[in-house]
Image (cartoon, rainbow, N blue to C red; front, side, top):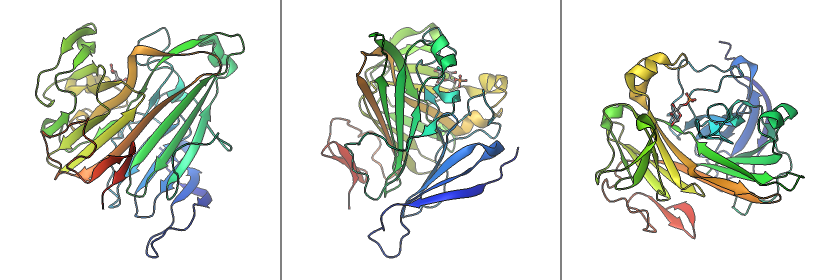
Length: 345
Ligand SMILES: O=P(O)(O)OC[C@H]1O[C@H](O)[C@H](O)[C@@H](O)[C@@H]1O
């Protein structure tokens, strides 16, 4: 594996208000196997890495340099294989919910940097971000005969929050609508899967992929893990927490436009069957995927869909058991202000 990193371009955002901190920056460089990647750095030291192959976030680190996403030591950075770990983009099909290959093709296409994206309503001050774009090739049109523009903004906020915004537009000139399913297939890094709990999905209905996609209702308790899990929770709240007791860290996932949430851990048997996944790595990862699966999204020509994911990692002074997605403020240091996440002072 040639992991040579070769710096090429650095673009700096406006100067940071704090004299002791460095301005957020965006750096283009070569990653594993010479694949192009983008490194986002924000002023307090957190960072993220994005491969143009797949439009794939492979790393998200906090201001102590600790990795927050799981990336398999056996991940294959070579097309057409999708990268195992980080945040694969599943589009235009989630899993095998359709006639395309598993999880669609966006995760194994080369994306381009979008030099001139249409304006975003969100504030980008003090954020390091990159805009990517995917348009179908002629080959793609043969397997999925629809013209689209998929714009992906990946941004790192001043507190180290990672934000992904997808804007997908139907650009068909034949007047035809298209439908798709979608997921941000996020692999979180956890200390020990048996010590982790997920709050926000209790009492919800789910489709169990391990039982012919049959529908069940989750019990009233937070989710814990002691065997393989592959479930699609339906109509979930906008906020889900992954509490890692051993690490004393809580991931807070906020989503918009993505009603479902997939929870996946392959456990030991499936782990062994995957060539690009270590036998014991299932112990240190958990996928919680903001998704639109049960009801496909349909776009008429000219229409655009937006799906947004915000991830933050906070110390686990987080009040376990008190997650209420309807509340405007949570007992951690983060809350919603005017529909946007802000860090309380
Ligand atoms: O191996 P992959 O194609 O990346 O898929 C990995 C997993 O993705 C999702 O979480 C699905 O629900 C699982 O059924 C699938 O096994």
